[in-house]
Image (cartoon, rainbow, N blue to C red; front, top):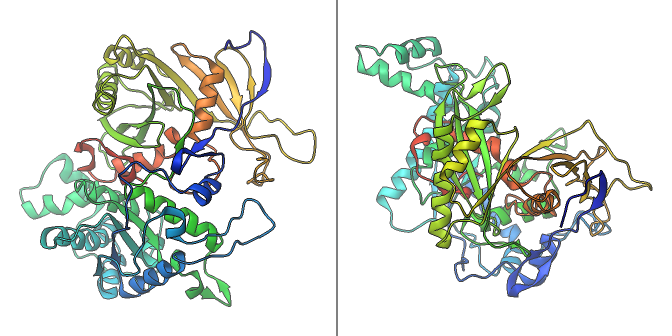
Length: 510
């Protein structure tokens, strides 16, 4: 197909997904209900879960498992985007036992004693340590294998285990270390003569975010895959204030669909994959995250997320360095670091397929500069067509539907052969609704390097919005290559050790 030489408004067909028995549907819930997940011989027959949290968290987990093993009524029977949940085994064809493989208990006293420390770095580091140490103890001492760890946390950890949270004065406890952020940075510049001071200063290299730090500190254990869940998500009826729910949550059926889909994926199951895929195509999302704990201004970690048609992905750690520019407000790699990163991607693809990719699409939020592009090309095989695509959400350009409904999802406005707008959000005929509140904004899509057909690039992006296994939804607004870029970057920079790890499956990061 040839892109137009003039501006053109078109509509792209909705990508189809493949489920069990090779059957094809548009909607993930339709496909799972009728045909079940993909079968490749590696799907689990039973979900082997380890649970860690306080005892009340264990009880709420077991209550929730009983619930998702049964029928959960749809919130609205008259709405196509609300689907009843028939039960985990009925959907995925495998069992989820009520009793987990193991239950590791963290006492409430230990949680409060560490979480409420005045020093945020100490509080989060030590609270995360309670969970990490127990999981590591289990790995050393027990033989029963756990496929997925449910880390069930009380609401207080979610509330106070984040960078900008403040513990109330009446709960606050004094620091037990005699260290401060200022002193720790001085020691990082000039190590102390006392080993205990150097050791105490280490915790200030960790991000003060419970979720990110927990996942980052467990990345060194390749067998450990984590699902962090709040007690209030499992049994919201247990948490009310003045007769009202403490939190606004999705309806129980939607929550069950989303949480069980990601759990199935994290235990090596494949819920679905794209049905119509061009052979030999690899998609890479470039990730940058500024390292706020670094002593050097502008230091950032670079990584890459490689995705295949199945939704399987690997996360590659790139270099850490002064990649951020205050003048351009952008991140860019030097040529040699870009070459190193793309070499890791190509080598991993070869190991999986026995040959290099025919096409390699690199997705980013900014245009790639000359150094980056030369680095990409230097390590890509001659037979691989490398294409750089800039994708950004854009609220400056809007289109309105002619009737009462918003613009259709899949609408594309081709401005030129290399640039256009794509509406990945919009009215969905199958659901008879637009799952949003405001006028849908498009993605700005630009082929900024290399040669490719813009319409085909947009079709690929549409497909990549449908392989987000962190939820069971019709489609996402962003392609999976960029959907989790911030989250992956936050985990890569959450600890100083996470930056030295080999490529790991994407499931470790979501």
